[in-house]
Length: 205
Ligand code: URA
Ligand code: SF4
Image (tube, rainbow, N blue to C red; front, side, top):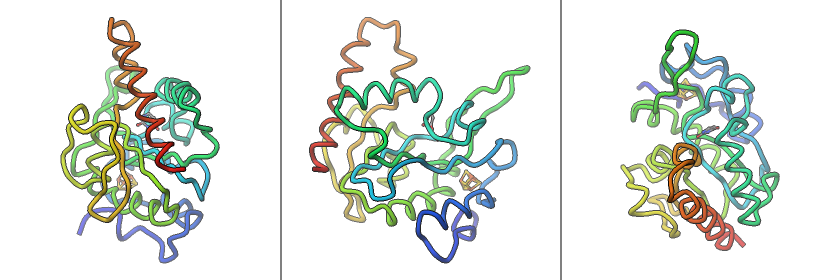
């Protein structure tokens, strides 16, 4: 069976998972990416934030949310009263999917096949951290955590239970806010994002 399962270590603690992740060949994305981007943050966090996949900067630096989307996320976390160092940050897909346009690398959304292939890593991380709430940033994260297609605007901002009994809140991806930066609705969209993060934090206390 294709997918990451065969590459997970026997011991499923975070350090063993992190050490094994660079060896994953569970889908084709490892081939063109610079490196795996595993996760960052507190191993006993009460809040886990799940993004889509590493971006261009994350692929180069090997850490999640260090690029432009990360800057918006940092500000929103601060505005929601959440300490970035106290949470656990990861992605639904651990390698950067892109195509080349001249010298530039253009982000491509992960395919459902990539999300499914990479899911064993996320599942193992959630089992190891065992947070009070999982926040899905965008449709890719929600697809992985809830195991079904999710329309973000229809489901955002409320705590729901996943099939395996986890408290889950879905919200927008900070990259969506980046793309909206010059829209008249930006302030409202940003405030809604902060409100969703605060709702998750409140439920985790
Ligand atoms: N976008 C994501 O979803 N994750 C990252 O780590 C960076 C950008
Ligand atoms: Fe493995 Fe996930 Fe990377 Fe695919 S994206 S090779 S499943 S770590």
